[in-house]
Length: 263
Image (cartoon, rainbow, N blue to C red; front, side):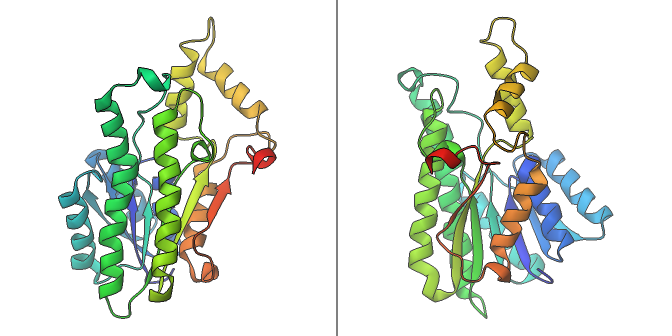
């Protein structure tokens, strides 16, 4: 990744922050984007302290103008765009049955998780086609929840299934123009979002605790543990690298074997 310019959304925590650090460690110049300026700047400081090069651009991926400005800022700073890891996602769309969600929640979740990925790809692809030499690699974060649906997570699951379709469509449309598109499909990883899920789930279990919920998750994973964000980050970086030059339109499932029985 030496000298490559990479965009990372959702880079303020979890898999996104781990990916930003990994891209930097492998030699890339990183543009970190997130809604949280304070947390995003913490990622930049971590990269700086490790000897890397990065900038932060505050971005709400559901807003087209901010997404376009984020790409423009990357070009202003570094001159081109080689890779993009579209990882930002909203917490909503879960913990209720499908018919109990309200329309405004549907709109919020879709705007971030699905529309946001489309907006990112739209402006990233345009830049990758216009630069010289043209081309690049895009990785979008889906979820094992998007592989077949999850009870009480209908909206979140639907958006993550949509991310897979966007990714596969783009892979076919742009392969001959030098752009690869793949999806990272993570299972349980120890991130603030997963810890939030454990906490919310424990609230409906009499006498339950987040640690009890964690144990039930682990019991379902053949690998016998929760993944580390760095393990997902390594996969995202590999998919963006030249080592994956013949890989496009792929859904890379990284879940410790959780969904192996039904793939």
